[in-house]
Amino acid sequence: MTKSKLNVRSFVIAAGIGALFTITPARAEDASAATYKDIEATLGSVPDMFKTLPDVAIAGAWAEIKGVQLNPKTALDGKTKELMGLAVASQIPCQYCIYFHTEAAKLNGASDEEIKETIAMAAIVRHWSTILNGSQVDLATFKKQTDNVFAAVKAKSQ
Image 1 (cartoon, helix red, strand yellow):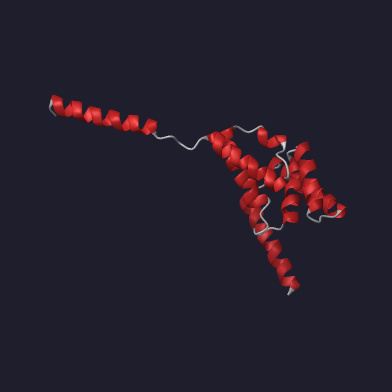
Image 2 (cartoon, rainbow, N blue to C red):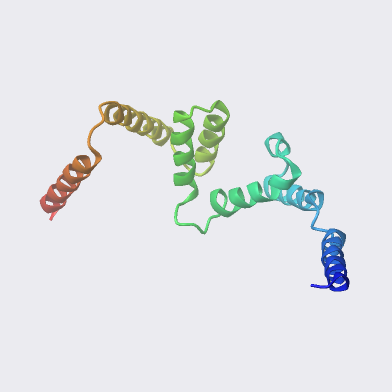
């Protein structure tokens, strides 16, 4: 390649890179301001938990919550989602999450008995997970035995 073609090529590459820097990407501050407005419109205020996130993360975090947890048009109803949240929160454990998901479950119609049962189920799963993992039970054998149990139960119910 001749020196003049090399210089022209270098200039074109440099100009292209320079042009990339002149394109102004969507600013995180603009997206977060719009997100905060939507959070306030949806919840009535913007809880501090959202303000702990960096500007670049708030829109995605809110989209996830709004798209799954707060969305009434998903496969699971609100009460089921919040009871699941409570079960997981009880195992993590997260006192913030336990409080939130308990109150959200109640708001979605969960009774005190359903809340107690959710926590009991979380404890049972944790207990048996500890036994099975600690004892290093063979997974393939466990799956086969589980399938046999379910087949027997299904046959009995027919």
